[in-house]
Length: 105
Image (cartoon, rainbow, N blue to C red; front, side, top):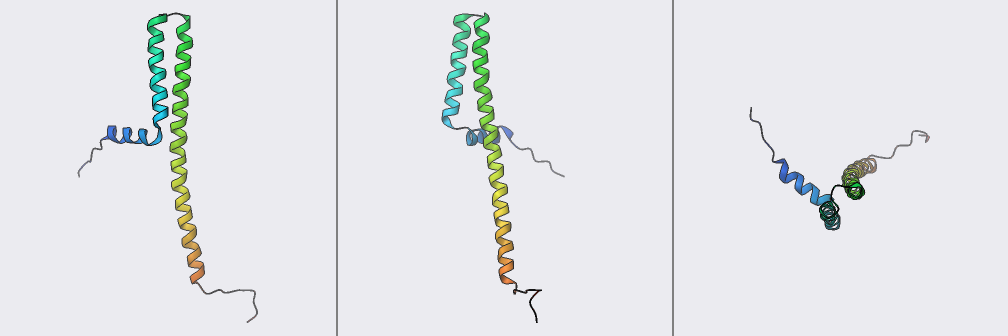
């Protein structure tokens, strides 16, 4: 019995770039840089809590965007499967002779 080991780091990075656009990544990077700059200019004071809150809101929005994108991709896959099943059922009904059980013989 052989066990295959998958490289998850490449797959995870690919999936992240698939669901997060460039603008989101740039926004997150700029927010992180501004947070670090504020950390060094303001020091550890009450104002840093406000900066941290802004950064966390930005991260939360990115996470929500990622989850929504993953959910939409999953829904599209299920919808495509349903569409294919419906098309298969419709073609099987068209091929079968039409029989009306209520019609007089």
